[in-house]
Figure: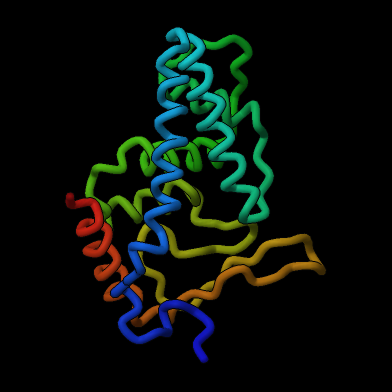
Length: 187
């Protein structure tokens, strides 16, 4: 039995049963429509504030999944500056938070752009501008040459959340993923 999806044969050929997911998709679209309607009823400043709060929570909560706790005010201030939103109480933030926000805004606000190696490597470089992950020197903005894993938790309680594919298949596997993402964007 395989443990990781990339160990499955034809792992990039995803399939699903439309009937099983169409009901859920319909419910999501209904809720999405309600939210859009409520947002349109708000004034410009309230809409801007709601967008800022939603993006801030998206960045903070996404990082929490990886076991990283970000300063809410720094994330919020960084997003406000990037989007040109004038708001009182902006605080300065670290280069690390700037990189996370830069990557998340590019991925969520410019999702119609093609997913390419250059873009993926740019996100990676934004997340690790010094070439280090904590005290560890890592390969940044390129395909790695060795195996890696995502580890979270405090010292003594660390656990591996993800183990990577072997480096020798990364470039080929990512090429398949790039193509798959582009195909899924097509109507």
